[in-house]
Length: 66
Image 1: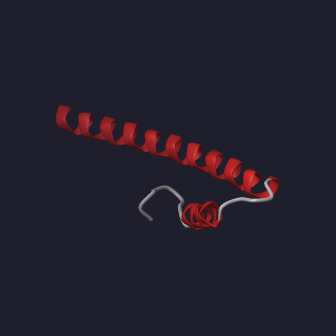
Image 2: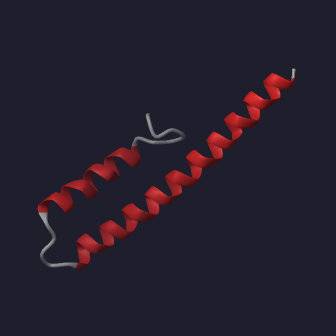
């Protein structure tokens, strides 16, 4: 029974970390999108990276691997 509690506690910590990481990624993507809009000469690789990041996060609900 104690082993099950430890496993569940670890899964809960992982879930909390995943939510926190997704929040940080969304904030970073928002800042990157604002940068791309504001700057005149943004490298094409940066524009592509922002677009790929948006696509990745749109397909993500609860996991980074979805």
